[in-house]
Length: 328
Image 1 (cartoon, one colour):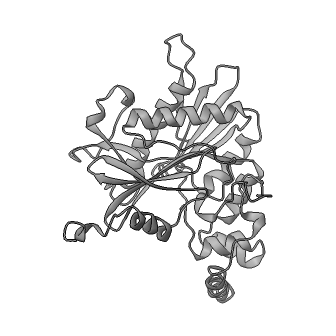
Image 2 (cartoon, helix red, strand yellow; image 1 turned 30 degrees about the vertical axis):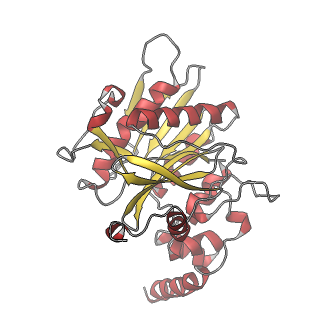
Image 3 (cartoon, helix red, strand yellow; image 1 turned 180 degrees about the vertical axis):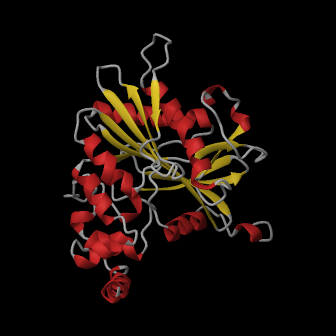
């Protein structure tokens, strides 16, 4: 116990130094691709370490749930056409617009009036925690799969849900299986944890077929243990990973050539609701909710903009701190 406690303190000490050091180039890209020229897309720890193609698109802000799901499906299809079968997706999730029903949305949300649904980042505002997020992520991925596998017959694909990957039953993890239409299957892991990657994703991704991870449970941004686990593959890195660092998971996904194909993220900056949209072949496009539900583009960036960069975009676009915006 004394040895382990000492190791923990040492890991914290090392991580405090690593937090101010630039990430190692070898870990900058989870897909194993490193930027070789100034025109190539660079990657950061704040984007799950996932590289993308040289950006060429500006992605519009989805104005509804159905538009977001169609963007997801389109990005999945375009990536598969380029041979990118191992995909990661992060999205905001549907919730009742009046917050009166914070419970479960069922299948078939594409047919629900968009006025009844708002898209909410998977944050602490979800009172039901990880399981409420799961019950919202499940129909989202199911709808995307239905669009992705459309064959014109009007017959929806058969989607099977397997909760056995969630041994506790309360971790909000499952895997959906669908027929891709070409004789292969699609495996979609909903809210996978680092343990899910170790125990299930690794084996599935080594077989033919498409594998998708939606809303992984590890954070996009790094804490100290993430930083150490990503830059140190030795003893301290292992201790940091044991304490929650995601470096080992990102390395494993990199070996399996996973790539972020679609992101719709959100948070609050200076009192304004911020949304960032990205496909695998685009820049990050940053939007601010200038009026309720009306989003205005305030900037673009090749890699994921950090909080300070978003603040600068708001300054340049004339968005002051929200509680003083009407006084000046």
